[in-house]
Image (cartoon, rainbow, N blue to C red):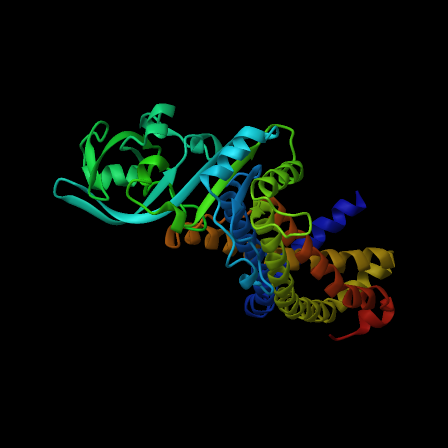
Length: 413
C-alpha cells in the first residue's frame, strides 16, 4: 500500500510542477520530448524503411537463384574486369538445368528491353518488355486478373501473344477489354491473352503493372538475344536449401561450359541473401549514428529533469522536514522524488511519442511511404524516458532523503 501511496503522491507532485510552473517545466521537458522524439522517430523511419526494403527483396523469392554473367555485390571493390568477357546465360544452359537438376522445382530464362507499344492511335513509349521462357510463371509467380498465361505450345512455337500489366491495360486500351485485342510491338501484331493483377510499386520502384511479357521464342525473331543481358531463374524444391542448389547448379554449368577443374567459374549464381546482408550492414551503421544523435538529445533532457528536481527539493524543503519529523523514512522521501522525476520524464517521453505518431501519419499522406509506429518502439520510448528520469532524479532525491528534519523545518527556502 505504501508503494501505491508513493506513486500517487509523486504523480500529483509531477502534475503540480506542470501546472504551477508551466513555462519552466515545459521548457525543461522540451529537452526530453525532443530526445525521445529523435530516438523513436529514427527507429520508426528505419524500421519502416527496412520493412519496405525486405518486402521488395522477398518479392524476388528467397528460394530463387539468379544465374547471371555478373555477380551481385554490396559495397567494396568490384573487379568488373574479371567478369567482362564472361558469356551470358543461354537457352542451352537452361535446357541443361532442366534436364539434369534434381533439386530445382522450376527454371526459366528471361531478357528485358524497352520499346514503344501501340494500339490504334494510342501508344506508350519505353514500355518494359520481358521475353521469357515457359516456366517463368513458376519461378516468379504472379496473379492474373483476366485471361491466361502462355501454353507450352505457344512458348515453343514463338506465337505472338502477350500478358500485360494493369497499367498497360488501363492506359493503352482505355476502358476496352484488352483480352483478344492485338497491339503492336516491334512493328508486329501481338495478341493480348492475359492481364496481371495490379500490385503497385515496391520500395525499389519495381512493379509488374507496366510490363509486357512475351514468349522468348517470339522475341528471338525480332531481337538479337545473344547480344543482350540474360538471366536464368531457378527455384528450389521444398526443403532444399539455396546452398544445396548452388552446389548442384555449379556442377551442371561447369560441365556444360566444359571448364577444367583449375578454371574459375565463368558464371555467377546470385541470391537475395546477398542484398539482405548488404542492407544489414547499412542499417547497422545508420542505427549507430541515430543512436549517438539521440543520446545527446536525451542528455540535454536529463539535465533538464535534474534541474527541475533540484528546484523542487529547495521549494519543498519545509515539507520534507515536516514529513521526516512525523516519522517518514529516508527511503520514503527518496522514492517520492525518484518517482516524481520518472513521471516528469515519462510525460515528456509520451509527448515525444505522440509527435512521432503524427509524423507517421503525415509521412504516409505526404510521402506515400508506410511508416509504422510499433508497440516495440513505443515501449522503448517509455522505458528510455523512465530511465532518464530515474538517473536524473537520483542525486536530488538522495539529497532530499538526507536532510536533517530540524534544519529543514527552520529553512526559509
